[in-house]
Length: 384
Image (cartoon, rainbow, N blue to C red; front, side):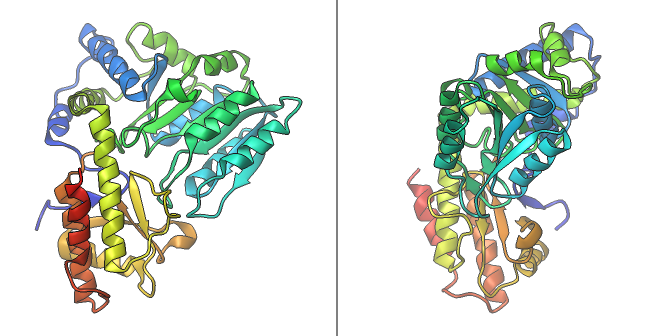
């Protein structure tokens, strides 16, 4: 059926009609008083979402822009940093750090496994000279469906005394609790097409007090991503460059929806969907890829045995117009991923599970009676 595609991927995510209508408004001048009011309002809303008193700056760009900005605005040439790497996006931050000439120590975990906080603690405690300037890691590793223990790792970084925590929260912000100030995270990067329930195009970087102190020392090259410019403009409820005006309209509408739902309810909904999806896949007989107890509330990665994951994804798309995500790099064909973040309701979970079950049965690959997955998901959803 035309125009019936349902996104069950980790980004872009479904966009509410209210947000789409806001997006379709006629543009206004980005130096106008009307736009300044929107910037002021959304800045307050972003601080609420990040649970911080610090600045949350808006860049027209992807989540990668926010993370790269966090790195280049706080570090200097030759600085020693630790990068956590347990998936595609952990690998990306290693590449970004090396591209800027940083001295990178990598703490790895196998794909599907969480980063070990004790490995970070040991590395930081061994740094008697306080040469480590930052720990860079991904909170929710989108490629594998694993959530890392950012709270504990950030605490170890704080105990170090001088290193910063720079966190990729692209698929965790707006999906799970990330209290920036309480956890002592210095830099958080995120993107609009995830938990924010918006189209791609805006990224957000929150900078704590210690990050701004590091900014004064940073000598890495930056111009468009120079957060000092954004901070100065934000003080006047403006932006240093021409922003994506209509995406600001969408941002305001989306954040108003989130405020009405409330942080606790948002986090509870995502946790409920993660439990329901995981229970459904297990009931169907499809193993999960993420280590038990470390599944992300934003996405569930499934590793079907004896089934080509790409073929299954294709059939679900063709038969039901539901788009699932595939595996990345060496996981392609071995893993499919079910996104359940942002504008996702209980019925979306049940529909996706039913579509996967029906496809498996149609292909003669079903291991259990049709309905077992839906029943398991419904049981978890009923728990609230």
